[in-house]
Amino acid sequence: MGPHAHESAVLKNWHIWTTPAFGAGESWSAAPIGAAGAVVFASDRAALEENIGEYMRNADAHVREAREKLDALPAHWTGEREVQERLIGALARLARRSD
Image (tube, rainbow, N blue to C red; front, top):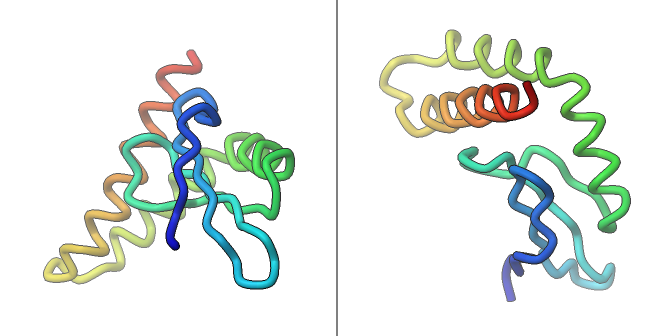
């Protein structure tokens, strides 16, 4: 048991996968390609696509939040710093692709 990738379900520039949820079917997760982890979640595919749209409508706010988190992290917290850096990079690539 673990995450199940939905290669055919990859929305443009996003990785999408499901994870079994005991007693609740499955949960859906999505990450912009290049990000270290999921940033959008839902209980089904349709809701996930809607949540991705909402996330992207607020992409500037998400970049700002990631930069603020990165700036607040101590230099020796390399793992968490990489998570934020990868998210910022992934969102920047998404922005360039939508131009």
